[in-house]
Length: 403
Length: 91
Image 1 (cartoon, rainbow over the protein chains, first blue to last red):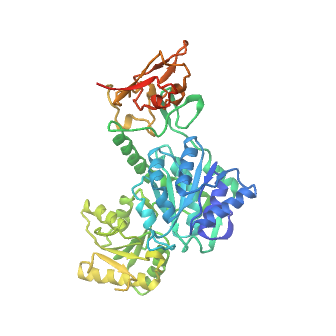
Image 2: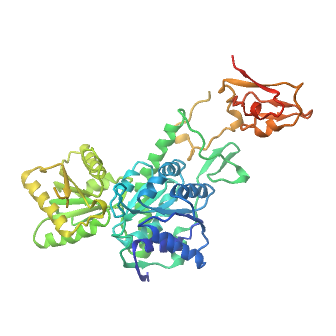
């Protein structure tokens, strides 16, 4: 299918996709490095390219609250944030997922204060790991564009009904212009379609799950010892359903775009002896290093994780295959923990299998520190050494830290 | 109490299937209002101030307290201009 090639940075790619989706309500508060999305979208509103009700709220807490209200009426709602903005949304993050409202939110990942830092790492979104949102991590602007189209269909799927954070690295992706292939507005409109609603039983009988005076229901009311636990378990069911829905929806869009991502993207894993597992923009650098090391005769590979929540344990297990040494790289610290959140997940998935690969945790790029090919190359070297030795020298390693 | 529903039997989004009228909350408080009709001027301000909607105005102009939903906050007694409402501690 013919596509238009545009030069867009990550923020612009997100804004362009959302412009094509044309959601009913956009409520957002600008914060670096997500600001360009809000600026761009307000231009689209001013130019009359979208019908969205654009709400200029006074804080991120209000931005997400506004989206919760809008989504509860049955509208499509979108917002964007990063770092401290996501932290300020905290309370409402759990409200959105608990009320099963399919809100879409861009997160241009940025470090948390203090000390004050505006650059990229994943500590903001990783902190919101357990808030019940689906988290998709993008490697480049093209993925950012595509993920902002598929997100609506995944979130609104009646078996899923969960909000989605589309995460991409602040500045590294949000402010870096790249080639992005975009599809026609009409194709986006057809792909995204209309929002559907599940049936619920309220006081006045069975009705669609949205606020409608014709058949009023109460949403977000008190839920105590007798039912809260059951409703939380339903959210887990939604996450599990997403493991099936995400690849289905992406496959459907790929019929138009030719780009199919899936839950994970393994690269050179068929005969890999050591591999790096990670997410975000670093995986582009890692792929470059894999090619270089392969050319030198090293059997290395990588597994890029796109969907961190739900965690695609089965897909990762299959992709790892007979690879016996894994390095999990991540841009976040869990202070006092055994290792980072991604590495903990990878390790625990192998506990229940008869495969026991050697796994090392590598923390890198905190506060926007560059992750260059040399650093990735060093990680592979240490993994190759671990293969010979049969274990990793240190469980938790810091890459690019002056020690 | 009716049989509690299981995870798969419940609708999505925690929508209450009972009206809030059916949740009896009048036993939450420690005190209840008592209206002295001899002093009452039928101004009905207590009805408007009640945050629970638990004070109803009768056709004769006097008010009646719905003790199934009154939580004994005492706002009516505080706001009454002729101080005809007394908060009485529950036994």
